[in-house]
Image (cartoon, rainbow, N blue to C red; front, side, top):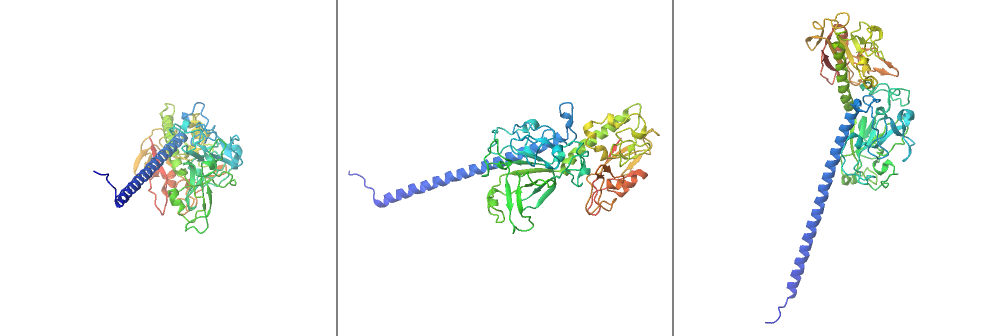
Length: 475
């Protein structure tokens, strides 16, 4: 038999099959790589979100637990003891130390109160000190796996600089300078069109993400190596606010809030937005906590402390009743004899009993000014002049025989619709002064008058008559 001959058309068919097989293999490989990248990106996004949430919870728990510090405890409720870390150790800077407007990488930090309006509190999250597990990270965080923590200086300064760290400071005029004793600006967060998402942010966490083509990430790099920016051009679809929004900026004018930009859009989606200027390299993921969220946590802790202190006071055989109150405008919380409606009295003052709540309450509670915040009502039958305790007592929502009540007034209502009790902006706190008017704290007209009637009511918030007061029984 002679050799088998391959006809030309058969060779062409075989070559065609090889080509199509190569194309199919290439498609499968590319698809595999695409899905692998998609899965990796999905895993990275899930990991980043989980870490940011854990970091948020850890910071809030730290703010609400000053007693966990090694003795002697020097920070107050709501004050950061582990400051953002610009040395990149994971341990954090010392209490009160922040960067400042003219700071450069490698320069020492300064006490925020000494910097005053120039204080800028930012850096990497002190993840080791807070117990946040980041997994393996390299020294210079090339892949952007270590969250940054940006904080309003309000959480860094002491009572000497700002004696009140309660919801009363929300909406107060900005002072910035110590010892001016007025708050610093809160942070602002905007979206990819410059629209404000919140201008009442206590602290924010930013996961840098992979490099975005900016400065090289190393030990001497500026924050911009990890923190991204977006330029919103004029002509953006309304509503929008054109401008340059830079998460790594800290040299802005004093008194101007630090502004952070965030987006839920992917990098690919940002490339298709015509109103953004090039380069549109944005890989940051931002999680922020508003002052309202933070103060809900702090107030719950402060309320428990006060409630327990009042019960301990009453359980003493030498005084089996509750203390009198302090006047609404008593900055020091000094007791006023026979006063049954006001702020909780932490000093014996004019009562002359020789004992006070200050001996029971932790200094970190008083140093934050919570005695200037809570409203306290005590039954005329459960005080030194009449210590029977019990009926008829105070009344709350029809329940009689209550010995004492605590009311948390929430943040002042400064814009319309106003609280029914005030009919205008509430202003409980001014420079070195507290308002003597119950209506500057309490939103309900009935509860303002309850100091005389002894009849209190829990009133649900409404659009026409906002009310964020919370009443609790101390029994």
